[in-house]
Length: 367
Image (cartoon, rainbow, N blue to C red; front, side, top):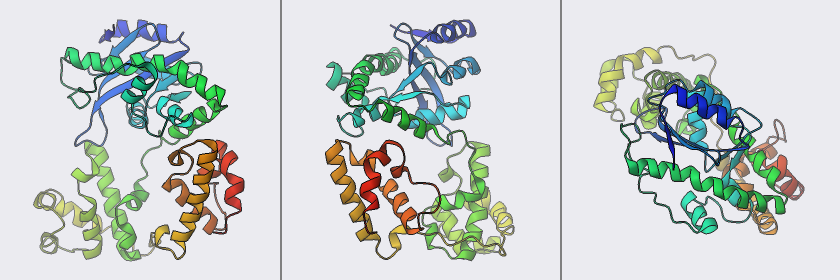
C-alpha cells in the first residue's frame, strides 16, 4: 500500500519518478508543543502510482525532494495546508506551486466552509477513515503500523478527491479562483520574521503609551530573537502579559523586577538580568506611534455591519461562504483602507476574484 523511504537511494528514485507526475499529493505529520517551529516527523507523497512515506528523521537532507515543490509543471494537491506551508518554508525554504487546496476547493464549489478531510472523503467517496492517530508522537521511532496506515490514508483518498473537485470548479468557472488562493496563501512564507515589528503582535499593545511602546518594542524584539535562537514558542520565553507589565512598570533594578506579579518566578530567575539590560537599550527619542485599533474608532460598528451585510448578500448570490469572500480580517483591512483615504495597497477584498464579485457593490457604501 505504501513505500517507506528512509535511505538516499530510495529517495532519489522516488524523486525521479515524481518529476514525471502531473499531480503530487502532499501532507506532513509533525509535533508542536514547546517549539517555535514544528518538529517534522513524516512527509506523505502520492502521484497516483507510488504512495511514499518519507522519513525526515532518517533523511535530514531532503533538498532534491524540496526542489519538486517548486516545479511549476506538477500540481501540488493538499488539504487545509497552512501548517504544512510553515513546514515547507522552514525545512525546505520553499513553497509548493501551483497549489490546489481541497478544503478551499470544497468551499469555492459550494460544499461548505472549512470542511475537514474525513468529512470530505465521506461525502465525496463514501469512505469512512479513522483519525485516531492524529495526535500521536510522530518523532518517536519506530512509527507504529497504525500511524503509518493513518498517514497513508491522508494522501490516498485526496488523490481520488481531486477529479471531482476539479470538475466542480471547472463547471462553475472557478478553477482560476482556486489557484489564485494558492498563490495568496504562499505569499510571504519565506520572509524572515521582522524583529522590529514584533511588538505589534503582542496582545493588548494598543493599551500602551508611546513611551511604554518603546519599551515593548525592545522587549518583543529580544523575546523573538531568543525564541528563534532556542527554537522555543514565544510563550515559553515570556508570555505576552509579562511583556506588557514590563513595558508599563519599567523596572530599573532586580529588586523592582522581582516585585512584578505578572512574571513567573522562573522567568525572573532565568531572564531577569537580561531583561534589565535589554530595557536599557530603549530608544526614547524615536518613539513608536500609538497602536491604532480600528474597532475603537467612532462609527466602526455601523460601518462594519454595513460592509458585512453587503458581502452577505453577495455570498448568497454567488454561493460563496462569507469566510472566504470577506472574513473579519478582510473587512477590517478594507475599512481601514477606506478611512485612510484609499491610500496604499488595495485590500484583498478588492483584488482577484473577490474584486470581481465585490468591488462595485462596496464602492457604493457610505462608510
